[in-house]
Structure formats: C-alpha cells, structure tokens
Amino acid sequence: MKILVLGGIAESKVIARQLIDQGHEVIYSIVGLVRQPDIDCEVHLGGFSNPQQTGAEGLGSYCKKRAIDLLVDATHPYAQTISANAVAAAELAGIECWRYLRPGWQANYGENWHDFKGWDELIPRIAEFAHPLFTTGASIVAQLDQRPPGQQWIIRSAMEIPDMDGLVAIKAIGPFTYEDELALMRQYNVDVLISKNSGGHRLADKLRVADDLNIPVFMLRRPELATANQSFDRVKGLLADIAKINAAGN
Image 1 (tube, rainbow, N blue to C red):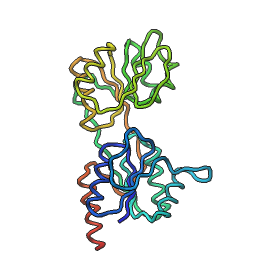
Image 2 (image 1 turned 90 degrees about the vertical axis):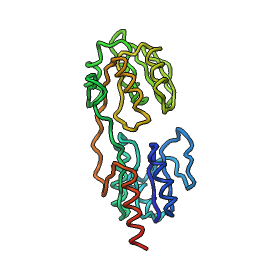
Image 3 (image 1 turned 60 degrees about the vertical axis):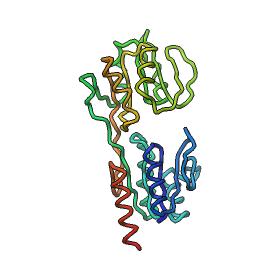
Image 4 (image 1 turned 120 degrees about the horizontal axis):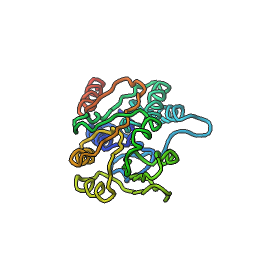
C-alpha cells in the first residue's frame, strides 16, 4: 500500500517507520520543521494549499496524483484544521482517513488542575498570579494586550518570539526533563502553569514539577476533531489493522 502519514508528533515517526518495515510505500508529511525527521522515506515539507485550492482540496489532489491508498492523520491533538482537511481530502480522493489520537493527560497531578476552553476565559482566572508560564506555543503572544498590569508572562516556544514589554520569551525545543522544568520554574518564580493537554509521557514532567511545587495548572481543553473513518489511541492498534488490510489484499 502507498500510505501518506501526516506527522507532527513523536508517534507519527514511529508509525511511519513501522509501516516502512511492514513493506508499505510511505510518504511522511510535516507542515514545518522543528527537527529534520530521521525517516527513510520521502518527506513532504509544507502544506498542500495554493491560490487555486484550499488545504483540503490541495491535499485531496495530491492524494489522487500520488495514488495514495490510505491517509493517516497522526498530527498534534490540537491540529484541528489539518485534521479537518485530512478527512475532507480523503473523501475527495476516494480513500479512507485513519487517525492516531494520542491519549490526553488525566487530572491526577493533585487538586490544582483546571480546564479552560479559550483565552478569554483563561486571562481573568490567572489575573491574581505574578509569573505565569505558558507552554502553549507562540500564538498566546496575540493575547498579550490582555495581560493584567504588573503580570510578567514567561512563554516557552519552539518559535522565535520578539522581545516585548511584559514577557520573557524562551525559545526551546523539548523534550524536557524533570530537572529542566524544575530549574525553569524556580528561575522565573513561576506561580501558575498554562499548557495544552498534548499527552505523551515525554511531556508530563512539567506537570509533575508543578504538582511538587504546588503550582496550579490550567489546561486548554482539546478541540473536537472531524470524524475520521477509524480512530486509534494506540500505535499498535493502528499498525495491526493496517497489516490486516494488507494481508487481506495479498
């Protein structure tokens, strides 16, 4: 089978490598490079939209042109637009879209765990804190004008953020160890942590540190994703079902 894997998380590379080992022809797609993917297959860098086509239409055309048999959405749990485009593109191309959705973290790091739906809800709820740490990406900078007077934001992101009044921008790429997170929170006197519920054991150390330091955690709820033909929360389950289809076809 020829399989297009939409990547963006650690498991997506695992899926691509395992599919290659199963004998499939794999194309690995990623929107932007944080690290060069170490995968022995064709890599498509960038999106699929163009002035004549939307992202869904461009991806659907690409799948038709490359004779893709199966589209695997293994993007970030918060990549709502990409996941919607993947489902629509698969329908346009007459193929199925299967999704790997990494399980989220559960609220088991103490009683200081709080969910929120969006920034307008969050900002008033953290107004009493002095040094919030945002690990939600660079997009939070757009909300800086809502920062309460005297509050200093610490923003850690893989993207470069220009210096601005009222924030400390830290460009860093994980994963981060418990010791890394502890040093960061102590250095900047962090008193509240704001995060996405990305899931994954490699990213949970910041939650453990926050719990040990009795720092409240505010977690952005996951968005609802377009319904894929099949959805998996375990890599092994996804790979096993693809192997079954391949065996049946042979």
